[in-house]
Amino acid sequence: MIESLLPGRLTARQKKEAERKKKEALARKKREAEAKRKREAEAKKRAESRRRHEEAMRRAAEDRRKREAAAKKRREAEAKRRREEEARRKAAAEAKRRREEEERRKREEAARKRREEAEANKPKPPSPSPSPSPVVTPPPVVPDPVETTIPVPTPTETAGQEPTDPPSSPDPVETTEPDPVETTVPDPVGTTDPDPTPTETAGQEPTDPPSSPDPVETTPPAPVDPVEPEEALHRFDSQVDFSSNQNELENPVTEFKQKPDLFVDLSFYGTDLRFDDGAEVEMWSFETADQRKNFPGPLIRPKEGQIFQAHFKPSKGNHTIHWHGMEPDPRNDGVGHTSFEIAGEYTYQWQPERGRPRDPNWGTAGTYFYHCHVNTTLHVQMGMFGPLIIDPIVHEDFPVSPGARRAFVDGPEYDIDTEALLVPYSMATRWHGMHHAAGLSGEDAGLNHFEPNHFYLLGGELARRPGGKETVWSLKSLRANVKGGSKKRTLLRLLNANYLPTVLRFQDSWGKPVPMAEVIAHDGRPFRDTSKPGEPSLPCGEAGYPMKTSILRSGSAERWDVLLDPPSAGEYQVVVEFRHWITDEIVGSRTVRLVAS
Image 1 (cartoon, one colour):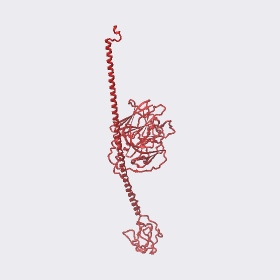
Image 2 (cartoon, rainbow, N blue to C red; image 1 turned 135 degrees about the vertical axis):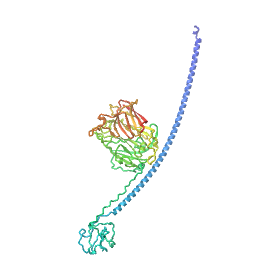
Image 3 (cartoon, rainbow, N blue to C red; image 1 turned 90 degrees about the vertical axis):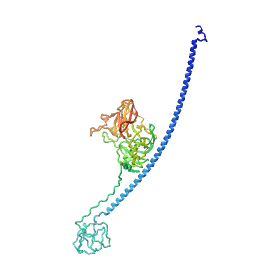
Image 4 (tube, rainbow, N blue to C red; image 1 turned 90 degrees about the horizontal axis):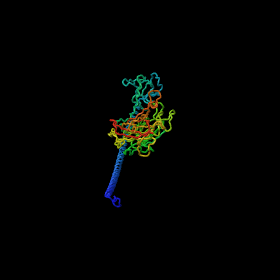
């Protein structure tokens, strides 16, 4: 016991404990060194892996750039080939048009000649004779051969000639020769001129005596109808011939052109655009000076009653602008089959009809769109469309609150700041490698087989469309005002620019349906209570039965106007399903976040 307390001396137990601690320290140090080595090896491995990954990404990016460059080169070559083919097709069409024009001119010239010949051969009415006493016939006397004047069937009378033979009866079978002494001058009133061509000349002795017509039995010949010119029509051999030979005009004239209240200068563009899923595809569409090569085309927004003009100058083949849902005259409706296709430039002109409160038969305010109507199926898929909105007039009986606008003349008010556009659009990239007139010459271009491989939602808040150049307006999110706040409700405009049926669903964040959409108009026509003819027609919501739903189905080119009425503030979902047009199965879908506040 005393020894254990002495300094410098350890007991066996303490030595054993010290040895154990020393071994543990060495083991711990060894483990730490091993862990450090492992960490360093792992870090080195991760660094090597990261380096290899970065190298692979660099090589992939380089390969992608090469592929894109090659693809761009191929597209440029294809575009050049298409331009050359289009130029050849246009030259052939121009040559054909000139041939048809020459044939038409020849037909018209031949018809004109036939008309002139018929007019020349037409019997002329008798002209008054300068013979003395043409009406009253004198008693039979022996005429003085020198002084007797005998009418002849010519426009010019021949006088001072002595006939060798007496005049004969008009009947060629029973011709009688009267005694020259008792010859009478026939009544000029009943005389007809059977031959309008002069046959005798003054100073010559006639070889055949003139005929003396019978004033009782002879009647003037019936007038001959003029020969109508042959109508210059091109008779189409087939539907392909009809589609391939439209009325092409270089620079058609705008008839009855007026000073516009709203003027838009549109032109055509074609370029490669990148979508939000990374796809880079050749697109065609319309552009203005402040919206350059953007997709969809620029928003056009006239007001009811305004004179609207849109100058359009296509630069790649023939195009038109059809104002889908509007009803202007055929020249300004943009349908080539009923008017013309534009080769040079043209200024469209029309005036939307003013609305009348409580009257379902007047007004054009609503959601529409415009698109090319040449080889329509292909050109719309290529992107040649844009939104068209007609705003209502402000009626004195229906004033508008600050920061708001009415959906139609007596319709509900909505918040301008959060007004939004939703455009479902599906893309078949196979179509985007076709040329301008694919399928119009009888070849099977496969335009009846639409198999999309990309699905998009375009649009957003109309007050905040991004500017810039070569951008796709993709829908990122939506806002909605909760009813009862300081702002009016949000108006959502749906435009189905997609060739597939779509189903739009409003849900909460857990996927439960929320009937927050009040439908107020369809295809530019407000929903009204028309159950009592002759009485004022109120909007359905004002009439006491708002049309609310959580689901909307739409087909190609269909438009809906809905007021959003979320039950409370929070986050919701707008889900758009793209359906197969035969099986109705979902072939694609997109979801957008909706924030209500």
